Image (cartoon, rainbow, N blue to C red; front, top):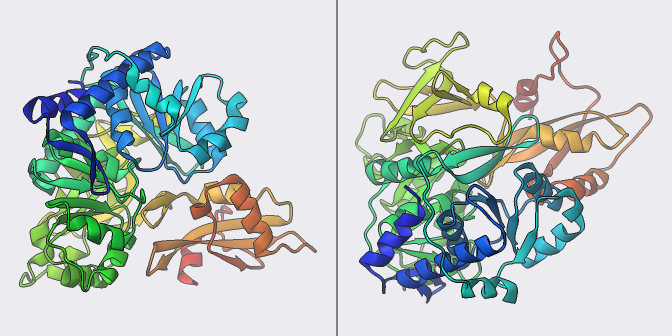
Length: 503
């Protein structure tokens, strides 16, 4: 069933309830949200979009984000939400890769994309979010709701791989409906009087979690700043009750540090994930924020839905394995099977480390136009996550390592090879290796080891400028180490484990 039916159902049940809010101001009731999304669907069809086409969002958080998502689904199209912090060339690659026809972009992103239009031949319309051209789309006659089966593409989630090129995980209407069911069973409850505050990017976890909130008829609140400011959120919590927020661990730490004297009565739940949460940081957050923390573990390929560490596990101080459970990512969510496999594909015993494999209706259909990557990730009905973990005797999963070498900084994935390829464009760099180093604030920070060519020298400023010209700012190294050589095995492969051990 088309996800847009969730919005229609909420509008039918409570048409006058607040659906979208900007700060403390209601931007649309459920009847208005459904009507505006239906008009957008009609406008998309007038612009030439047909069922199955892709509509992209390269924009910051705003009430219109949800209108565009549901408008795309209403028209039978797939949404392609993109991290607003990407570099223009990264946006262009994604837009071209999946042949986006219509793209909504924040003003500064639209300006950066304009000179690259020749690289995106399928892209016919770049619409500046919030502009007069955007507002004019709501004047279109509402379109009939398109049929969409459970296997129809709904959300194309681009997540980089070890090759450095993003891969588009194809999430269907069925995948996202399975995620909604798992949320209500394994993560949290939602009442119609509740809300979600979108302090984290709606292109990722916070946007995924708008779906169960719409299903429950709850309100979506976008901070007036469009982002994460603790003082602003404290003010919102005085106005909105039953509030849930999705946060990366670094956000939880910042929020807890600022919350000593804050009134948190309006805060129901903080769901965190996307990066390691160290036990001491978690304990401090529990002491400050109270019984409000819930952890989830998922991937773009199984959106937000592999395991969950429930609220009760965070507060069960008397349990004999309390600290060990806080260090885990919890147990398998409803409708999901999780097993650990060794290199031979066989299950590993309890307590031993293996690759995390996932099966269930939530698992993606594959990667967009990438048969090789799909075949590597989906085998015999299982998603091979590339993450390593171990089960305890009660089924709690603890992450041990990431075989893909992904660096997770502030909740954002950074892939070393992507950064390495940029650094190696400087002829003075003979070799380089990028790793993640533990960082108390960000979870991990990017460190680049550089071997310069003979009789050459290069400065950190030179390399910073090179990175800033080609990749997003948050991906650039925070530290450079200039070394004479990189540790390697007999096959010439760089031993990144040794680099990490010598940090």
